[in-house]
Image (cartoon, rainbow, N blue to C red; front, top):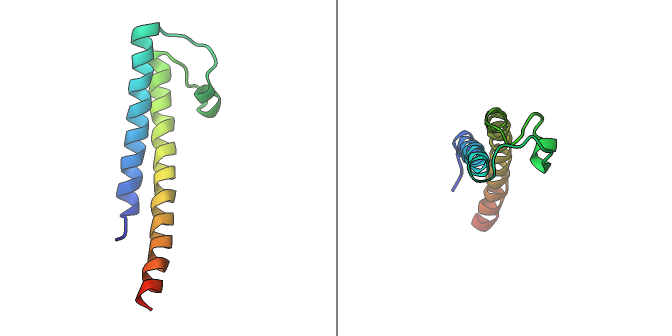
Length: 89
């Protein structure tokens, strides 16, 4: 079975982007906004636990998840294709 690389990448990007956005708002609701330095703030330039930072994190995470999902699906198809060819022989 082969994966559709674009569809898988889009699903991963949306999952990671929306997940980070919702997690940021969860923290804002219960702990309040803070502009302190976080680990993700070092990876995603401009990301903070603020309403604007959640939008910046959403964009970064969409791109990051899309690229990661595309690489994962491509690698899965690459390795799965060689395994299927070996089992037919």
